[in-house]
Image (cartoon, rainbow, N blue to C red; front, side, top):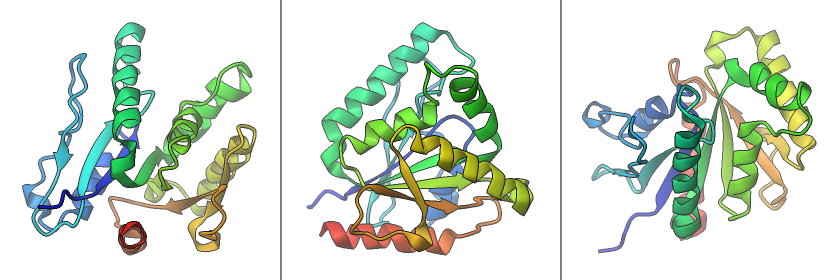
Amino acid sequence: MNQKPLLLIIGNSNVGKSSITRLLMPNPRKFKGKIGKSPGSTLLIKKTTQNNLPYNIVDLPGFGYVSHSSRRRGEHIKKQMVVHIEKHYKEYFFGLVVINILRIEDEIEKYYIQNKKTIPLSFELIQFLREFEIPLLIIFNKIDKVSNLDKKKKINLFIESAKEYGLDLIHLNDHKSEKKSEIPYLEFSALKKINLGKLKSLIQKNIFNQS
């Protein structure tokens, strides 16, 4: 029996990874959520699967996962996540980097504007995953929580700041698949299911490209 390919869903706590995972499930009621991480110091990496789903999902914490915990514990979990990707990256056909649009300004203000010697954790995570050539989609989740004006402002801040770290983000509609330097992004709402159809279609396309 062939092993199913893996879909990576990664991001910091409270960005909506479990909600997105549930939306991708053929039987969402059977998905309990939050199985990809543990509140303890050990990162429990488990696959979410259902019979009618052509891939398995792995939910991993981002680099800022333990914002309310000790730095030592945070570094421990980060190291485990890094080791996992280094060991299993070839098994992932696609990766979703989930960003909470409500946190963008605070993160960039703290790690980029106020301190030029640090890097926003989201950018560090994207850079890391790109080293392994995992095809990525950046998901700006929770767009239902902001006005259209604020949405554009926050996303533009993220895009322009990302350029300083060599990351070229472009809207999914404008993305050319042959340009590997570009990283597509999608405006999304797990709560309102905004652009869920586009997300599912893109996942299916990447499975097809792998086969």
